[in-house]
Image (cartoon, rainbow, N blue to C red; front, side):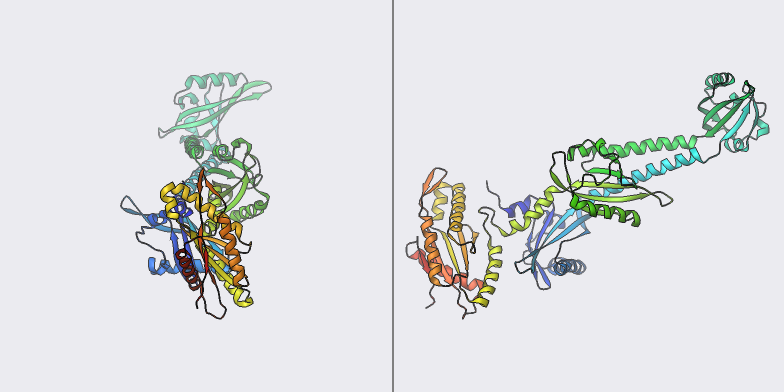
Length: 555
């Protein structure tokens, strides 16, 4: 079954799509797809309406300014916007990426602007959550390093039976007891549990073997602390004469490690179940982490990326701009968004869009770049094909009315300057309704396609054959010189139609009626007036029995 591109745009694309006609300083909607109507809560026909007709004054002014920017610059612009959407009877704020693409006529004037609006609410939420997780991991790591490296240790001296003989002042700050309260006591009395393990460690160290382990210690206030205790033999002249107990309070570190493990688990749950690519990049541009989704989307094992430079697989034409924006985002601390190409494992070039944000610690030192990347190959294909589909008939692939209008405008300007003839031929299929009724619409569609092909085969390369709708076609003949040449071309089309027709095993007799109209430089003709004259001639051809053509005569 054939589907028109209009149906695809209207119902087949989740993104909001708008086609806007440029009229001097005004912009009028020519098309809005179903997604846009539903998301914006529009329940009326908007064709022909301006921004002011459809939106509040402030929003209309904002849209006009953006669209004027596209017209003035003559290039694509992208920006982020937000809108309110009713969900479960409540208004919720949604974020969107808006891409405005100018469409130019052959003279280089911007005549239309195609707007593709993509909802990025979930992307922004995901990026924010990933950044929060990485921030917490970085913070926990720093606190861990600070506790482990910079805090001074508590030191106690024991005799070989484990009785305390001395210590430093840090001991007091850790366990709350003054040294005089501790001297003469067994260190085992401070330990909460694990007393047998401590006794074994003291025996081993007394034999000259350094030991270490984690223990629970009860401080003066009765709180239970976790300490890391290292017992070192004090050896004099080859004999163990005492023991050093070097310990640090790692209670907070243990809590941080547990929180770190939880944060990492949550981060990895997100990353390992994400449909997008999640990447962490260090200050050297080296990849330190990639999500397993790399295997699904690019076909590479995520381990193949770790340790490589982040642009190693990016298309050479895009690597420069990616490097540049990476440097800028580290300097400015601002997030970035960029589109680029890279290869998958099958050597296919795919399009991607990355949203990245730098992560800094509390000292404002760069830690990581968190990058969320999405495959936008299909969207890029939509965009690249959008102009073609907007100007061509989906059944015959011939120019549609929109493109014919633009071609006519160019041909008219050339004719008025050079006076070298301009004509149009309107034509349709004789008794086409009968073909549809007898053989069905599938055969009817095939007849229309073949009819268009035969017309195209009959005309010059400089001519334009367009389908206006149904079985109605039109031929634009620029620089035709005179009526005789136009008639000669109409005769050629007629003969081409008289060749045998066989569609899916069905033998048909297909003919056409045509109306020919020539522009006169002495008249102030328009496209509409010339098409009207051709239509009048077409009706006369039908009245003469069809399978012929008539040249319009205003006499």
